[in-house]
Amino acid sequence: MTDLDRTALLDQLLRYVREDLATGVPSDLITAGSPLLELGVLDSVRTARLLAHIRTTYGVRVPPVHMTGEHFRTLETITDLVLLLRSQTASL
Image 1 (tube, one colour):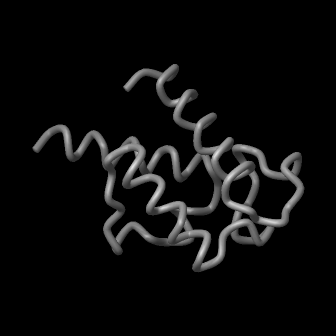
Image 2: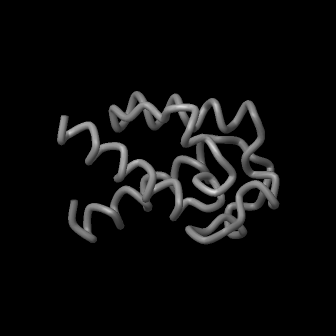
């Protein structure tokens, strides 16, 4: 995947979190590098909704081993995780 594809994916995830996840956090505080857990953007329910969105939109299932604070720290780390899992799936 090219950097442009990464940028597009990051933009799509950012838009989803800002517009569809109903976080209660002002959208201008949610950026690609915002600490999602610390801001309260992600909790168990919203994380489950985000995982469902990733699965249906991008065809990527996130295994439990990857459901860590490290991978879900920011939208940048989530984007990198989706790209990693897509590349692993494509190589199978």
